[in-house]
Length: 242
Image (cartoon, rainbow, N blue to C red):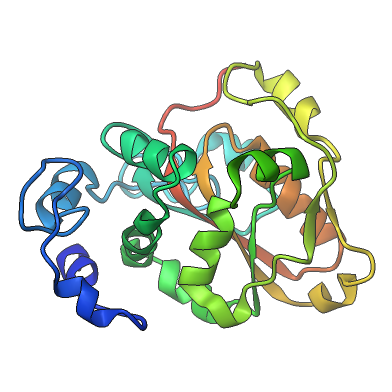
């Protein structure tokens, strides 16, 4: 499936999909930007918890942490582990302006089990919002680029707002992470009616601790969304430490 999706041309520039390129991981040439061999090698399908996307043993649908403290999202799906080479590729995409990676990244997400079904069922697809300061520094929101690739006609970037900037989450203990993002997301009160009783997909690029997407999903549920599914490109595979 990965090979078919990565090599299938789409969009208004279909001819460009046949131009010679080089895989940014193995440097094979000519090849796709992320070649099928590297995808097969570095993105194997592994069982993941259906509500937080952490790896679980085969046959276990939900991890113990989610059973003890159910998250506000009904489902969480991840395409890649946040590890080399994907961490390197994501760095180019997020911090070096290589927005051309959006298309192969979106195809990787669409190839992940359950993603197409989640998108088909969603009435709104929302990107995780960035603070105005961080958006000004970077110039674009990677989550919005992904959302538009996944479901352009249903993407809404005006419903979920980030009310304040927060420091990076990964180095903080769990209690501080939760406090760090508490109240950081809010639904635009003038547009909240659009969420009433709706099924929503929330798109993010990287999920590390999960505190941010949980807070955002809780804000969407509080505003009346009937169901929130989270789709992330990459997920760290270590459980959050207390």
